[in-house]
Image 1 (tube, rainbow, N blue to C red):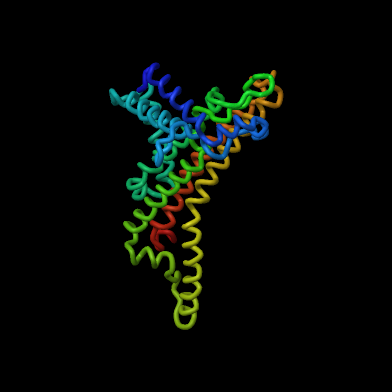
Image 2: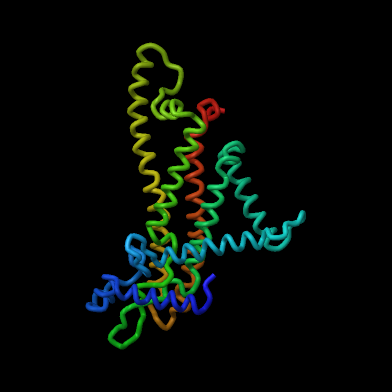
Length: 302
């Protein structure tokens, strides 16, 4: 963990790097443009530019949230007791509830193989969404002063919501897509995987069977297109909801500056619910996609 001096050094270096970015230079040269662009910017500000590798504000917050989750899990399970209490009780309740919930949807056999991914993705997305609502998130950083010398809009925040960055949501979706392919091949084999997509279903004979083969080849091609678009839909669904939510909170806070502490409060509660729902939706969609490719036809009828 960084000490106070280490964090101060990083912040000073980050400030210098932010000042060198094209966006910051343009904002300084044209403050009227910076004032016109209110709300969260679509791209995460670059804090440190190392050439090929760039450290953004959302990346820094990703590390903080991940270390927080790992640290809490280690703390909760440091002294495991037969009758759990305190943090251990909460952590075991969370994991067991997720396991029982997923087992009722995709079955015990598939849960044993895939639970590590679904539980991790749900817990990570949930805590990232909720951590992004901590007061100060998005309001600590650098910006361009207005005509009165005040700084009411932060154009380059030091910390930015993790899932308000499309890079993160797309990365999680692509990781799922890679896992989905592996699980599909393990469950069906290469030939079974192809037959699952293009093979005719049902018991047909004669000319009807030939017709059904042609129909299911076309259906299989449409299914392939649908599969390729799943990472895109998963990433944009999560990103869009979190990005819009953070912009709404900032807009509500700027409607009446004197009541900036009160007006956003109902929207904070709404975003708490949205954060939970979006984590649940991402986990459920990935689980159902996995179930559809891993279950066999007779199991589906059963």
